[in-house]
Length: 95
Image (cartoon, rainbow, N blue to C red; front, side, top):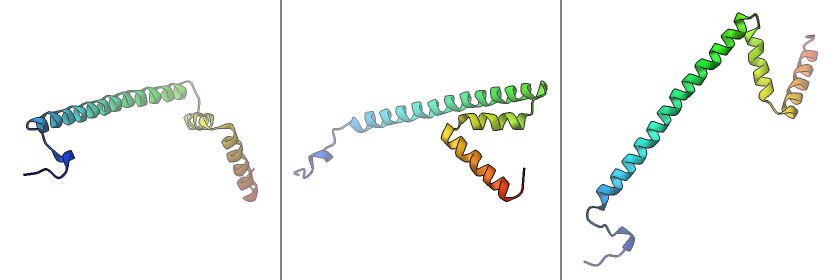
C-alpha cells in the first residue's frame, strides 16, 4: 500500500520512546512548578514575618504596605496617581 503523506510514516517502537519523553518533560515541569510554589510560600511567610516585626516595633503595617506598593510604581505613574487623588479629594472637599 503506497503512503500518500511521508510525514505520517511511523517507525515501529518510536511511539513508546516519544511518549516517555513527553511524560518525563511533563513530570519535570510539574515538579518545577511544585518547587516554585514551595519557594513562594516560604517567601510569603518571610514577608509576613517582616510585617509582624514592623508592627511589633510600633509601625503601622497598613501604611507600610502602601509605601511598598508606591515604591514599586514608576515615578510618572506615581505622580499621576497622586495628582488624580488630589483632584478627587478636592472635588469631594476632603483635605
